[in-house]
Length: 108
Image: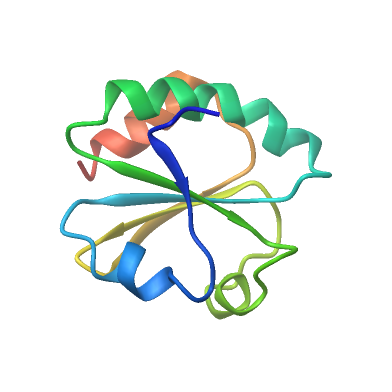
């Protein structure tokens, strides 16, 4: 995993995501999820390319149930973009890198 991608938990959520001064992309995932593994290399590339304007965090939905429930995560991978502590947009499922960068470019 890219060193620019960090992990967030239910307990660190407020500090890492809601209080971040930079936009944050959260990847809700699970170890057993095949599509989550498919999107991981795309997120690694995006972490490098957007490192100056976006933070990326991964949240394991099996180890953290409160936050995914709070935000209505029903399928994984789910990507959610937060700015200034607010949920701005979400994307469910695996998408090509070009589509994901177009999604991000609307907000960062």
